[in-house]
Image (tube, rainbow, N blue to C red; front, side, top):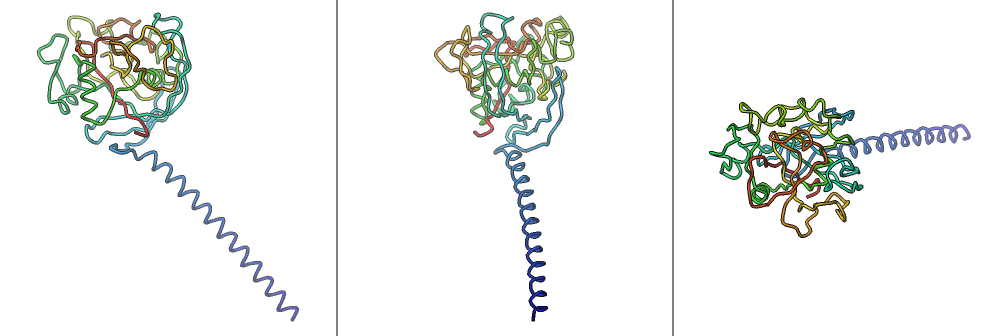
Length: 295
């Protein structure tokens, strides 16, 4: 009888151990599935196709960024991770002060400036047609774009202009130097500016994506065409928002950022900003698009 009881206890112990092993295996599989689900959730963004991840380096910073394609327009985007940074510059113009801390939520921003082909596809127009400082071609940056027209483009595509804080955060990509690649000496590798483009032979907006990208994989954040932002232009950062949102208080002009092929190196700094009348196009003005991660 005692032998039977001992055998029964041994069977129970083995069965219990097997059940515990099965339970641990089940938990491990559930954790793996949850991790995969989290990745798929980030990879799936409504109206976008996930293209994969790519590594970029510039200015001593390196990132592995997720890239997407907007299904309606075919425009490529990168996912900018959330984070904080110091916006502005104490060594720049008065309107770049005071330096202030800003926390920016994750968002998508287009990898390149909007091209002539993309603008024509959406708007059916060519604002640059017949103008000087233009070389026509599908891959050239669209210019002679007013802020009002840029907003119409956004409305038709379900996209938006970046806030000024989002723009500078994406441009800097973690750097604190004047330029996102470091100092001025390497500017020709990263930007079209008046030192390599403002001459008789090349005095026009250039093809996007030729110059090296920043550490987030964004091309032409300095030079080529100035890029509209959502914000109204103020002459200082006093009382500016610190949550990454656009500054839309009263004011007549709208912000543009990044410098152009027609400007000097000073205007290509990451902190450089200016404003212009929203209803008037200009030869150096174009755009880059954004989309909230959770629209």
